[in-house]
Length: 258
Image 1: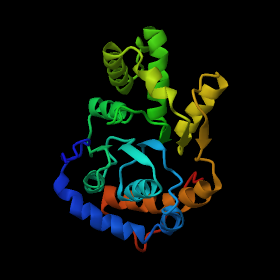
Image 2: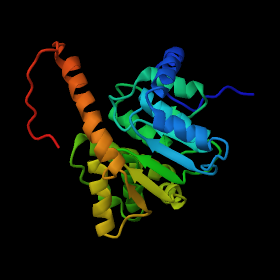
Image 3: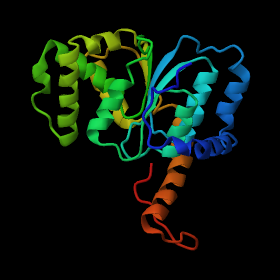
C-alpha cells in the first residue's frame, strides 16, 4: 500500500503533539463528542464529500474527525493564511485526511490550496462546502463567470484579488470548464461568517447563487455561544499575545461589543 501523500503541511513531526492536543480538546467539546457517540454507528454522512475551508486549528481537527466518523469524505484548507496551527494540520494529515494548510502561507499558496480543495484524489468532486469567509464559494462562482467572460478578471481591486484572478486564469488555461465541473455536484454550502453571508445574500439577490446555502452565522447556537463566549475568550487571548501584559486586576472598558 502506497504512502498517503495528498496533503501539504509545515512539519509532519508535529503530528504526535497535535494528536495529544486533539485528545485534550475532545474533553472540552462535548457536543461534537455526543454526536459521534450517537451517530458513528449509522454513519448518516456516508456519501458526503465535504470541501472544508475553515481555520485549521485543534478544534477544527475535532470537527474534521467527527465528520469522518459520521461517514463523510473530507478535504480541508485553512480560510486564513496565518491561522493554521501546524501541529493540528500535521495530526490530521497523519490520519490520512487531505489537508493543505500551514501558518504563513503566501497568497499564491492560499489560492492554490483552495483550488486543491476541489480536486478529489479519485477523480470525483465535492458535493458540499463548509465555508468560513466565503472564499471557497467565491472561487467557484467567479471561476464559472470567467469561463463565460474572462473580462471579469480584468480589474483586480487589491493584491489578493490580483493573485486570485491570476490563479483562476491559470486553471482556465489548463481546463476551460474546470469551475463548472467543480460546481456541478455541489448540493449546498454552510457559511459561518458575516462576510461570507453577505456575499451569499448578494449572489442570491442577483440570482447568481449556484446552490443552496445555510446561514450558520445567524443561528442561535452560534450567536448565543460563539459570539458571546468565543469572543470573550479570543479577545483576552489576543490582548495577552499582542502585549504580554498581565490581565488580572485590570479594569477594562469594551466599546461597541455586540
